[in-house]
Image 1 (cartoon, rainbow, N blue to C red):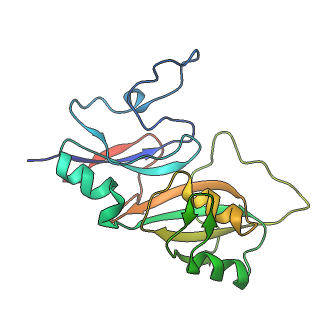
Image 2 (cartoon, rainbow, N blue to C red):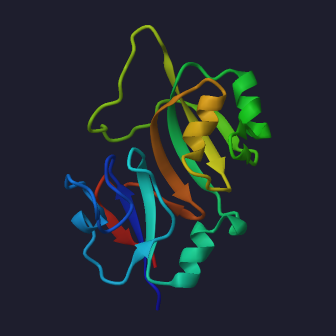
Length: 181
């Protein structure tokens, strides 16, 4: 039977088990997960937090990570500025990036979610408001959500992946993991 692990990746942790070639010791998955034979199904950037799936099943890994399967991924993004209808509509239509136009995102403004404190905290500018968005995308271009929000003049300050397909982060604390199947 295949194994699927849900992991709440903390900020600053690499989505891999080793950090070869780095002069400084950065945290990796091996600092949190001591399960042989599992590998990440997709990536989550070092400066992003939240749900990372790991599995020992190559077919499941491909189904989760490969954009051709169009598995939805939902993020909570704290952005600099207030998201107006024009910016939201651009995100919903697809945004022009250097590597092409993104597929349309499902996006809505949300109240500040109850999340764990980030370490280190985000930078706050007293003269610039921030707001939260819930975005769902079905592709996985490099740093896509950050580039999409920047393209509509809403730079991302904090990014938390909340859901991948049917799997939710729920009550997992940063650095915690549990088996899903």
